[in-house]
Image 1 (tube, rainbow, N blue to C red):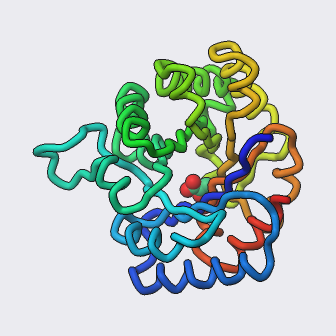
Image 2 (cartoon, protein in one colour):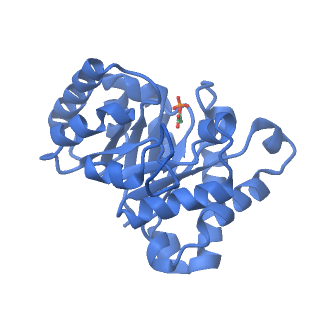
Length: 254
Ligand code: PEP
């Protein structure tokens, strides 16, 4: 059985105090209301990771992560945060290649491949994001784009390394727009990604890779998305900023 993961990407939101209050609410509500097996990952700004990882230290199915890290190990890179630093404050996951990083910070696949290496070599788990723009989908180029993003960002890894990776399919046109891919559209892409993995790494790794969907996931559409055979959870943005909506999304994953 593949691991199911619901991750909340807070982006650049929540003061430290607000963040602590939100995690307290989420963990309390999950204790009372959720008995499923999904892992719940809180991905706050860097400044909150240490405190949140301490808060969640005794929670069996909750962990924390970072939204980005440097591709370098250490040195004169002002403003950067290394994977080793993230590991030292209790992060377990690191998002790599979120579309906002690709779009606003010019992160490209070769650069992301280096970040994935940095993450893995510090025993952290990359959540590697991929997804097409609306223009690319309308031109029917989405499968090519996804294949390029995945092969250039991940397919240099050995089997043992790739087996650690989580993938998030996030169509750019669905992020923060309120437009969700239909379950059929998402399932089609997830099955395509699994096929790419199968061709490169074989059946066992393909079947074991967690592929999350992201893009305007909310309580109203989560159950249907999670019913698809190849959708193994969600990377949630806007709806992760509020305890009720985030917990209701987690509860949709049985
Ligand atoms: C995201 O930021 O990864 C995301 C999917 O955002 P939203 O849920 O707000 O579309």
